[in-house]
Image (cartoon, rainbow, N blue to C red; front, side, top):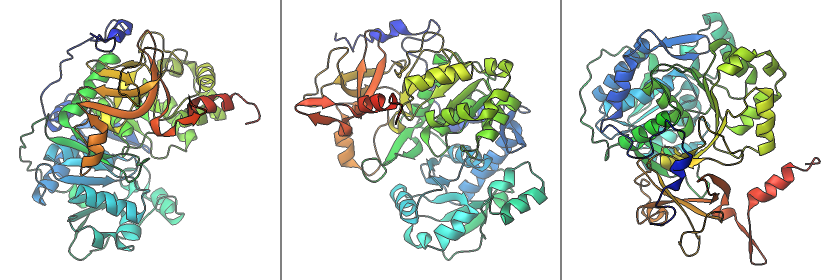
Length: 491
């Protein structure tokens, strides 16, 4: 047995964490989420701009949305593109799609007309849920709808529809351009409907048989750092496994937490964080604009979250906002963990953040990607978190670090490409046979990330394979250059 095969890192797990053979139900997520919404029907599911939506309300909306999809031609496995910012409509569309047997496919509302046409055609989306402004100014005006023959139905909405603001304030916001708007009018050969009309559908849901290990729940597009974004297949089992890995890791209890994150739902991190919240019947603060740190700070004070997840840059923006000093220590003490992902968080910045927000040993660096639904590693929840390291491989996850040129395992402490197997790892990309051959080799997913594993099993990211620089025969990692630069006071 090799060092990596021994999974020696389990010795560093918190005592409560299952070391192997975590129990993962072989069940479709639509029913799992539906059951979770019924545990505490009167409890908030989310808060959005002064509006509170209970789990009872959310479930009703989800069932109406799912029924509409089925009655308008959705069959098991059909794709529904969700082209929205963070708002309750995204959650309704996401859970409604899953419950109806469809595949949810997040789609950034900031995409250009060419980018959105590519994603709709590549996924063969039959439905799209979008903003009325995007429909009028992009899909319709710029002719995107003529380029996507598989698309049958457009469901248009406005973010103001679920705001808890007065009609006067909403109207004023639209007039001032703070709330984008667009006219929802018919289009030849497309079924164009308003979101609010969809929610008037009488519930008549048909049961869908799901094979969790084979059927997709998400088709999530990568960031496209190496060419066109790739549609990543995520099965019901992949997503369920990762939810339960994280729940076990964080020692989560049903209905015990309040979650806050500004990660966009169309990004795998934001959607996964919400999936975890709903799975555990927890409420989540829905953050529409991550740049509005005044609003985020106010929500922290008002809603008293126990778990917060954001990118490092947003944590720094919050830390540097003078209003952060208005958060009482009692509320900061209420936060159990600040999860950070998706970008490097300089060690010095973490130390400063811990000091300002009374968060010693609460900043948890984690590592993952779209293809891993999304998490591969996490720092311990209770044990010491190694600053600058992204933590330990999750339960039942196999990880090796290999020589980029030979594919052989590298010794602990030496850099190599991170490759992984696990119940959360994607079966592959849609319509990308060559990418699948290069990325999934002998069952191992090649992340393209270069890292180091220490004697305790912690991993430190040092670069992307494609970003390494050869200098006189030596490998130089861009992250090391960046670390040195951040320490220079003139930069």
